Image 1 (cartoon, protein in one colour):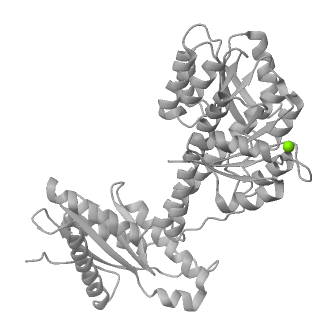
Image 2 (cartoon, protein in one colour):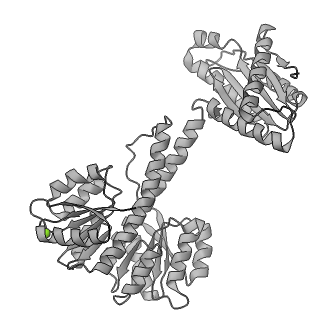
Image 3 (spheres, protein in one colour):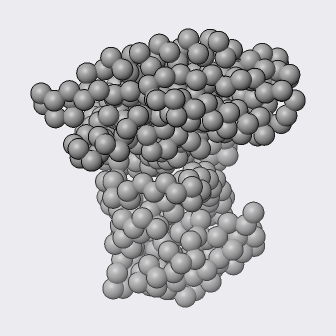
Length: 463
Ligand SMILES: [Mg+2]
């Protein structure tokens, strides 16, 4: 997997030099010699990392960085700013603009490649989440894209810092960013706290004396609770080798002593912002999946989910033995509710029936809105007789609802129900068995309709 790196610098010899070094490590490199050229190329070529010169005529690196981070098409691409000046205020300004790191010219190979590897790995992770989000949108689920960037406020950090005095400065710098922080003394305490507390950042001091800080960094990466939590290393200037190993073990960023409170604040913020972005992709995905299987009006599962679920239940039924029943239910004279009281009243009637069904069934049962005014319930472990009892109870419950389409107006609701069951002897594959079961329940339902509605009909066993 060759990563794509975009090199942006106004001086042709700088571009050539970086290009040659990166190409020698088998990275795929494209170059841009101005800010506007970079802004044109980045969304089209979709690099995995951008190395961005700060001092450029016209549009400087800070502005290019801020623009890339403000664009949904490029916000997830890591940016490393490269500058001849090593000033702390410059670094903070670059980080404020959303840069992921800051390297000082001349850039040594070891530092360059350590950062490139670590940031490309991070980018790959985000790409995976973005891809999954795209897949669900192909399922026909589209989330609104206008949610604001997630806020860092109200987030929480855990710090493993040796020195008390320094911890007070760290906590104050984080507090200025709205990040609450807890200090722990060692790895055991840290893991215990992280197992129970939501945490958005871990600060790990490489001076940690009680244990190997890198072992801890690696453990944070393997534990479920902290796998995606950013790790920020606090390092001495002579900790270079430790830092490089830390990056290879999955640490996300670092800050060198003496601690600059502003730089710490901004690095912490950038790491947390990236984590929240990842959390948002994950939440969007879970939400998209739930939308794909849920009926929005009633909150019940939809037909797609019910059929899939029934199929897997029936497949396992054949190996495990046992029985299963299904009910098809239809709200009687639904059209007349819509005609007389309007569609809002029709919706309310469907919601009332859905809620009554949900209250009556067991936790193991699956309820779905099957379509229109039709519902289905799948009852694992239930025989036809069990399901018939449950169906009759449900029919009575709904007939007893005092549904009010308008204030002061009571409109009676009734349902017709068809019940069918299947046993382990039904030697068919899951899909065919599911189709047959639903078809028999549906036929029983139509018989109930023909016989005058508001009643339960149980399908005869096949064969
Ligand atoms: Mg320049």
